[in-house]
Length: 164
Image (cartoon, rainbow, N blue to C red; front, side, top):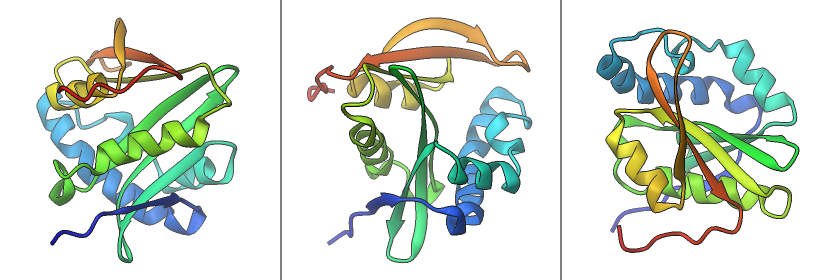
């Protein structure tokens, strides 16, 4: 019997754990894109504390006392900008990321008309997750270091696909 992670609001005391999980989670992306300077890897503890202290919504996934994932949403007008979806490497593929994505959308429900996020253009697993949750690719652009990204959007009322 497996224990399901609980999704809870994150606070400033979680900053160190969030940064640790985020760095571990994004190492694979950094290796894939041959860029050790991806923003989630260069973000500082002070920047994570600032995100947790400000208007950004931050949720954490916990297995008991262990933080195993997190996600953020910054509200801007009628748009929720979802970012930094991170799951500890040993917990990936167990639905934690999907639950975090669903939870951040629920936390923004009624406050926005759409969600937007971005991921690496060659990050097939991430793209499958987002597309299963109703996100559609709306643009392609490089990050500041030249890594190819795709921008995805979803209406706040889009149904979730269950066939993928």
